[in-house]
Picture 1 (cartoon, one colour):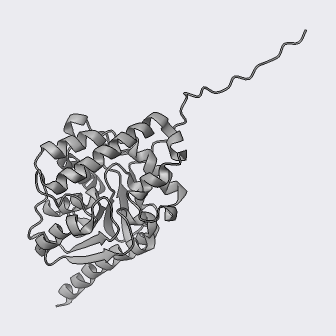
Picture 2 (tube, one colour; picture 1 turned 180 degrees about the vertical axis):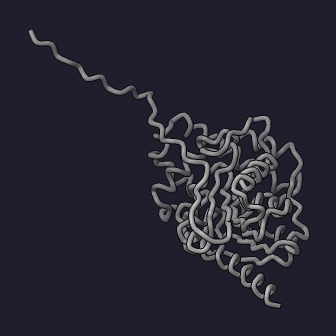
Picture 3 (tube, one colour; picture 1 turned 45 degrees about the vertical axis):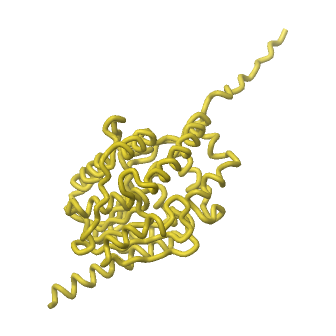
Length: 294
Protein backbone atom coordinates (compact mmCIF):
# COMPACT_ATOMS: atom_id res chain seq x y z
CA UNK A 1 0.00 0.00 0.00
CA UNK A 2 1.58 3.24 -1.08
CA UNK A 3 1.70 6.21 1.16
CA UNK A 4 0.93 9.67 -0.13
CA UNK A 5 3.35 12.33 0.94
CA UNK A 6 1.67 15.61 1.69
CA UNK A 7 3.50 18.80 0.94
CA UNK A 8 3.39 21.19 3.82
CA UNK A 9 2.22 24.62 2.78
CA UNK A 10 4.12 27.54 4.19
CA UNK A 11 2.36 29.23 7.04
CA UNK A 12 0.52 32.35 6.04
CA UNK A 13 1.69 34.01 9.23
CA UNK A 14 5.32 33.54 8.28
CA UNK A 15 6.72 36.78 6.94
CA UNK A 16 9.32 37.06 4.25
CA UNK A 17 12.05 39.38 5.48
CA UNK A 18 14.65 41.11 3.34
CA UNK A 19 18.29 41.43 4.41
CA UNK A 20 19.11 44.52 6.47
CA UNK A 21 21.11 46.92 4.27
CA UNK A 22 24.64 48.06 5.10
CA UNK A 23 24.76 51.28 7.16
CA UNK A 24 26.68 53.19 4.49
CA UNK A 25 27.49 53.27 0.80
CA UNK A 26 30.93 54.61 -0.12
CA UNK A 27 32.13 55.19 -3.66
CA UNK A 28 33.90 57.63 -5.98
CA UNK A 29 36.95 59.87 -5.75
CA UNK A 30 37.43 63.54 -5.01
CA UNK A 31 36.45 65.89 -2.21
CA UNK A 32 34.34 64.12 0.42
CA UNK A 33 30.57 64.45 0.17
CA UNK A 34 28.16 63.15 2.82
CA UNK A 35 24.51 62.42 1.97
CA UNK A 36 21.87 62.41 4.74
CA UNK A 37 18.40 60.99 4.18
CA UNK A 38 14.93 62.03 5.44
CA UNK A 39 13.41 60.79 8.70
CA UNK A 40 12.27 57.11 8.71
CA UNK A 41 13.99 56.33 5.40
CA UNK A 42 17.52 55.06 4.68
CA UNK A 43 20.48 55.89 2.45
CA UNK A 44 18.63 54.04 -0.31
CA UNK A 45 16.80 57.27 -1.22
CA UNK A 46 20.10 58.47 -2.74
CA UNK A 47 20.75 55.32 -4.78
CA UNK A 48 20.00 56.90 -8.17
CA UNK A 49 21.92 60.11 -7.35
CA UNK A 50 25.15 58.59 -6.03
CA UNK A 51 26.61 57.36 -9.38
CA UNK A 52 26.56 60.88 -10.84
CA UNK A 53 27.99 62.49 -7.70
CA UNK A 54 30.76 59.87 -7.56
CA UNK A 55 32.28 61.24 -10.78
CA UNK A 56 33.46 64.30 -8.82
CA UNK A 57 33.37 63.29 -5.16
CA UNK A 58 34.14 60.53 -2.74
CA UNK A 59 30.56 59.94 -1.69
CA UNK A 60 29.25 58.41 1.51
CA UNK A 61 25.51 57.92 1.80
CA UNK A 62 24.83 57.09 5.44
CA UNK A 63 21.82 55.70 7.25
CA UNK A 64 21.12 57.58 10.47
CA UNK A 65 21.26 55.90 13.88
CA UNK A 66 17.96 54.34 14.90
CA UNK A 67 16.87 53.79 11.29
CA UNK A 68 16.58 50.65 9.17
CA UNK A 69 20.15 49.47 8.60
CA UNK A 70 21.71 52.26 10.64
CA UNK A 71 23.64 52.03 13.93
CA UNK A 72 21.49 51.02 16.91
CA UNK A 73 20.18 53.73 19.19
CA UNK A 74 18.38 53.17 22.47
CA UNK A 75 14.86 54.57 22.50
CA UNK A 76 15.44 56.84 25.47
CA UNK A 77 18.45 58.38 23.71
CA UNK A 78 16.65 59.23 20.45
CA UNK A 79 16.95 62.92 19.55
CA UNK A 80 18.27 65.15 16.81
CA UNK A 81 21.47 65.62 18.84
CA UNK A 82 21.92 61.83 19.04
CA UNK A 83 21.52 61.56 15.27
CA UNK A 84 24.12 64.32 14.81
CA UNK A 85 26.49 62.65 17.29
CA UNK A 86 26.19 59.41 15.32
CA UNK A 87 26.98 61.18 12.05
CA UNK A 88 29.97 62.93 13.64
CA UNK A 89 31.25 59.59 14.88
CA UNK A 90 31.02 58.31 11.29
CA UNK A 91 33.01 61.31 10.02
CA UNK A 92 35.68 60.61 12.62
CA UNK A 93 35.77 56.97 11.54
CA UNK A 94 36.15 58.02 7.91
CA UNK A 95 38.92 60.46 8.82
CA UNK A 96 36.92 63.39 7.43
CA UNK A 97 37.49 66.56 9.46
CA UNK A 98 35.13 68.39 7.11
CA UNK A 99 33.12 67.49 4.05
CA UNK A 100 30.43 68.77 1.75
CA UNK A 101 27.05 67.84 3.21
CA UNK A 102 23.78 67.37 1.32
CA UNK A 103 20.69 66.43 3.29
CA UNK A 104 17.01 66.04 2.64
CA UNK A 105 14.32 66.85 5.23
CA UNK A 106 15.75 65.89 8.64
CA UNK A 107 18.99 65.30 6.71
CA UNK A 108 18.97 69.00 5.83
CA UNK A 109 18.34 69.90 9.46
CA UNK A 110 21.32 67.72 10.42
CA UNK A 111 23.44 69.33 7.70
CA UNK A 112 22.90 72.69 9.41
CA UNK A 113 23.85 71.12 12.75
CA UNK A 114 27.06 69.69 11.28
CA UNK A 115 27.90 73.12 9.87
CA UNK A 116 27.33 74.61 13.32
CA UNK A 117 29.78 72.04 14.69
CA UNK A 118 32.39 73.02 12.11
CA UNK A 119 32.22 69.81 10.05
CA UNK A 120 30.71 71.12 6.79
CA UNK A 121 32.53 72.71 3.84
CA UNK A 122 29.23 73.44 2.13
CA UNK A 123 25.60 72.65 2.89
CA UNK A 124 22.96 71.70 0.36
CA UNK A 125 19.73 71.50 2.34
CA UNK A 126 16.88 69.97 0.35
CA UNK A 127 13.41 70.64 1.81
CA UNK A 128 15.00 70.87 5.28
CA UNK A 129 12.98 70.20 8.39
CA UNK A 130 13.30 72.10 11.67
CA UNK A 131 12.44 75.67 10.67
CA UNK A 132 9.60 75.88 13.19
CA UNK A 133 9.63 77.40 16.66
CA UNK A 134 8.65 75.55 19.83
CA UNK A 135 4.94 74.76 20.08
CA UNK A 136 4.21 76.75 16.93
CA UNK A 137 1.39 75.78 14.60
CA UNK A 138 3.98 74.61 12.07
CA UNK A 139 5.58 72.24 14.58
CA UNK A 140 2.26 70.81 15.69
CA UNK A 141 1.08 70.31 12.10
CA UNK A 142 4.24 68.41 11.21
CA UNK A 143 3.99 66.37 14.41
CA UNK A 144 0.39 65.49 13.55
CA UNK A 145 1.37 64.38 10.05
CA UNK A 146 4.06 62.06 11.39
CA UNK A 147 1.78 60.62 14.04
CA UNK A 148 -0.59 59.70 11.22
CA UNK A 149 2.29 58.20 9.25
CA UNK A 150 3.36 56.27 12.32
CA UNK A 151 0.00 54.50 12.40
CA UNK A 152 0.55 53.49 8.76
CA UNK A 153 4.06 52.29 9.59
CA UNK A 154 2.68 50.02 12.33
CA UNK A 155 0.43 48.40 9.76
CA UNK A 156 3.42 47.99 7.45
CA UNK A 157 5.44 46.44 10.26
CA UNK A 158 2.66 43.94 10.98
CA UNK A 159 2.42 42.98 7.31
CA UNK A 160 6.16 42.66 6.80
CA UNK A 161 7.24 42.24 3.19
CA UNK A 162 3.61 42.03 2.08
CA UNK A 163 3.35 45.77 2.74
CA UNK A 164 5.38 46.43 -0.43
CA UNK A 165 2.60 44.85 -2.50
CA UNK A 166 -0.31 46.81 -1.05
CA UNK A 167 -2.37 48.92 -3.45
CA UNK A 168 -2.07 51.69 -0.85
CA UNK A 169 1.61 52.15 -1.69
CA UNK A 170 0.97 54.91 -4.30
CA UNK A 171 -1.05 56.78 -1.67
CA UNK A 172 1.85 56.63 0.80
CA UNK A 173 4.31 57.68 -1.90
CA UNK A 174 2.11 60.65 -2.76
CA UNK A 175 3.11 62.20 0.57
CA UNK A 176 6.74 62.49 -0.53
CA UNK A 177 6.46 62.45 -4.35
CA UNK A 178 4.36 64.67 -6.56
CA UNK A 179 4.48 62.03 -9.30
CA UNK A 180 4.50 58.60 -7.57
CA UNK A 181 4.60 56.78 -10.90
CA UNK A 182 8.04 58.21 -11.57
CA UNK A 183 9.40 56.39 -8.50
CA UNK A 184 11.13 53.12 -9.38
CA UNK A 185 9.78 49.92 -7.87
CA UNK A 186 13.01 49.32 -5.95
CA UNK A 187 13.05 52.79 -4.40
CA UNK A 188 9.36 52.54 -3.52
CA UNK A 189 9.75 49.12 -1.89
CA UNK A 190 12.75 50.22 0.17
CA UNK A 191 10.92 53.38 1.22
CA UNK A 192 8.08 51.24 2.61
CA UNK A 193 10.51 48.79 4.22
CA UNK A 194 12.50 51.53 5.96
CA UNK A 195 9.43 53.39 7.24
CA UNK A 196 7.92 50.22 8.70
CA UNK A 197 11.20 49.15 10.32
CA UNK A 198 12.36 52.42 11.88
CA UNK A 199 12.80 51.81 15.63
CA UNK A 200 13.21 55.51 16.44
CA UNK A 201 10.04 56.61 14.58
CA UNK A 202 7.79 57.33 17.56
CA UNK A 203 10.58 58.07 20.08
CA UNK A 204 11.85 60.89 17.87
CA UNK A 205 8.37 62.44 17.54
CA UNK A 206 8.11 62.46 21.34
CA UNK A 207 11.65 63.76 21.73
CA UNK A 208 11.17 66.60 19.26
CA UNK A 209 7.89 67.71 20.83
CA UNK A 210 9.22 67.74 24.38
CA UNK A 211 12.86 68.69 23.82
CA UNK A 212 14.68 71.84 22.85
CA UNK A 213 14.57 72.67 19.16
CA UNK A 214 18.02 73.13 17.65
CA UNK A 215 17.22 75.19 14.59
CA UNK A 216 18.86 78.59 14.95
CA UNK A 217 20.71 79.06 11.67
CA UNK A 218 21.10 82.83 11.91
CA UNK A 219 24.45 83.82 10.43
CA UNK A 220 25.32 80.26 9.43
CA UNK A 221 25.44 81.28 5.76
CA UNK A 222 28.21 83.77 6.60
CA UNK A 223 30.43 80.89 7.74
CA UNK A 224 29.51 78.10 5.31
CA UNK A 225 28.15 78.36 1.75
CA UNK A 226 24.52 77.25 1.97
CA UNK A 227 22.22 76.24 -0.86
CA UNK A 228 18.60 76.04 0.27
CA UNK A 229 16.65 73.80 -2.09
CA UNK A 230 12.87 74.02 -1.87
CA UNK A 231 10.45 71.65 -3.59
CA UNK A 232 7.47 73.36 -5.16
CA UNK A 233 4.99 70.51 -4.62
CA UNK A 234 6.17 69.48 -1.16
CA UNK A 235 3.09 68.28 0.77
CA UNK A 236 4.98 67.36 3.93
CA UNK A 237 6.86 70.65 4.37
CA UNK A 238 5.26 73.23 2.03
CA UNK A 239 8.04 75.65 1.04
CA UNK A 240 6.10 78.86 1.70
CA UNK A 241 5.59 77.83 5.32
CA UNK A 242 8.69 75.80 6.14
CA UNK A 243 11.29 77.10 3.69
CA UNK A 244 10.67 80.82 4.12
CA UNK A 245 11.90 80.99 7.75
CA UNK A 246 15.23 79.47 6.72
CA UNK A 247 15.56 81.82 3.76
CA UNK A 248 14.87 84.82 6.00
CA UNK A 249 17.37 83.66 8.62
CA UNK A 250 20.10 83.09 6.00
CA UNK A 251 19.88 85.97 3.50
CA UNK A 252 23.22 85.02 1.91
CA UNK A 253 22.03 81.50 1.16
CA UNK A 254 21.50 80.49 -2.45
CA UNK A 255 17.81 79.61 -2.72
CA UNK A 256 16.73 77.22 -5.47
CA UNK A 257 13.20 76.01 -6.17
CA UNK A 258 12.71 72.63 -7.83
CA UNK A 259 9.47 72.94 -9.75
CA UNK A 260 6.84 70.21 -9.90
CA UNK A 261 8.66 67.97 -7.38
CA UNK A 262 7.69 66.59 -3.99
CA UNK A 263 9.42 66.27 -0.64
CA UNK A 264 11.97 63.62 -1.70
CA UNK A 265 12.95 64.91 -5.15
CA UNK A 266 15.61 62.20 -5.64
CA UNK A 267 12.77 59.77 -6.25
CA UNK A 268 11.38 61.75 -9.18
CA UNK A 269 14.35 63.61 -10.66
CA UNK A 270 17.68 62.12 -9.51
CA UNK A 271 19.68 63.76 -12.32
CA UNK A 272 18.33 67.19 -11.44
CA UNK A 273 19.10 66.70 -7.75
CA UNK A 274 22.64 65.55 -8.54
CA UNK A 275 23.19 68.59 -10.76
CA UNK A 276 21.84 70.88 -8.03
CA UNK A 277 24.30 69.50 -5.49
CA UNK A 278 27.28 69.50 -7.88
CA UNK A 279 26.67 73.08 -8.96
CA UNK A 280 27.02 74.16 -5.34
CA UNK A 281 30.13 72.11 -4.53
CA UNK A 282 31.80 73.21 -7.79
CA UNK A 283 31.22 76.85 -6.86
CA UNK A 284 33.05 76.28 -3.57
CA UNK A 285 35.98 74.58 -5.31
CA UNK A 286 36.21 77.45 -7.80
CA UNK A 287 36.17 80.02 -4.99
CA UNK A 288 38.92 78.13 -3.17
CA UNK A 289 41.09 78.11 -6.31
CA UNK A 290 40.63 81.83 -6.79
CA UNK A 291 41.57 82.40 -3.14
CA UNK A 292 44.72 80.29 -3.54
CA UNK A 293 45.87 82.28 -6.58
CA UNK A 294 45.01 85.70 -5.19
